[in-house]
Amino acid sequence: ENVTIENMTRARFQKFLNEMGKKYAIETTKKIKMHVHQMVNSAIAEDVIIKDFTNGTNTTGLAGKDRNLKFLEADTMKLLVNNLVSRPVGERPVTDMMILTGLHTGCRYSEIAALEWSDINFTNNVISINKTWDSPRKLFKPTKTKTSTRKVDVPDVLIKDLTEWYKLHQNTTFVFTGSNSYPPTNEAVNKQLTRNLKEINSDKMITFHGLRHTHASWLLSQGVDVKYVSERLGHSSIDITLSVYTHLLQTQRNDQTDKSMALLNNL
Image 1 (cartoon, helix red, strand yellow):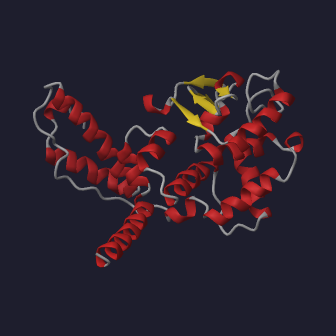
Image 2 (cartoon, rainbow, N blue to C red):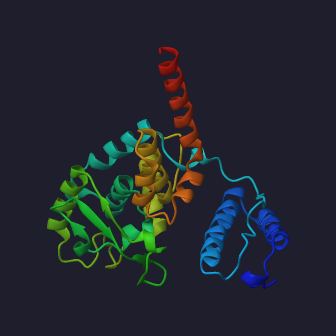
Image 3 (cartoon, rainbow, N blue to C red):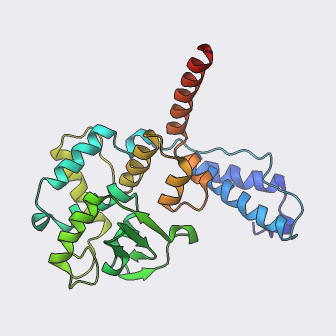
C-alpha cells in the first residue's frame, strides 16, 4: 500500500518490515530500516512529522550468506597481491589492474570502471571518485550517493603501477580500457579474479565486490578508525559501516576488553 510519511504509523511500518523480511536477507531489511530512520529524522527536523514511527520496530529476514565468504583473510589477500604484481605492468591484463586497484582502494566496480586519467592525481596519491560507469548501457552515471563522491588516498605502490600503466595507455579515455574501447565488464573482471584465486589455491572464491569487503576488513582488523574507513568506502552513514562489519568490530571490542581488564588488573 502507498502511504505518505505523514500517515505512516509504527504498526504499518512494522507490517512493511515483516513483508520485507519474507523476501530479503536480514542485513537488507536492517539497511532499509536504517535508511527510513534517517529520512524520518529529516522529516522531524523539518516539522513534517512529530514522531519517529521506526522507533521500537523489529527487523526479520532470511539468512544471508556467511559473511566470512565475502572477503579474503590477510594471508590470502597478500598472496593475491603478489600474484597480480608478479607480472610486469606492461604484461598485465587490464582486469588485473582493476583488481589491484580495487584491493588498494575499496572502490566499487562501477567507480573503478568510470575512472578517467584526469581523476588520478599522481603527485598527491589521490584518486577522485566522481561518477560511475553503467556497463550494460555504456554511459556515465552519478555516484551511488552524495557521500560516494570522494577522494581516496592510495599507496605509493599503486601510484607507481598506475604511472607505468599511464605511459602505455595515455591516449585512452578510460584508465582501464578493454579491446572495445570501453572498460571490461564486471563479469569479465570476476572471471579473471576467479582465475587468480585458483592460481593461488584460495579456499574462498569472491567477486569483485568482495575486494571492497577485503579492503575494509583488512583496515579495520589493523585498528584503523571506523569513521575513516566509512568515509573511504563512501558510505552514506557510519551506521552502514557498523552494520556491515559488526563481526569484525565485535572481535576488536573483545580484544579491547581483554586489554582494558589486563591494564586495570595491574593497577
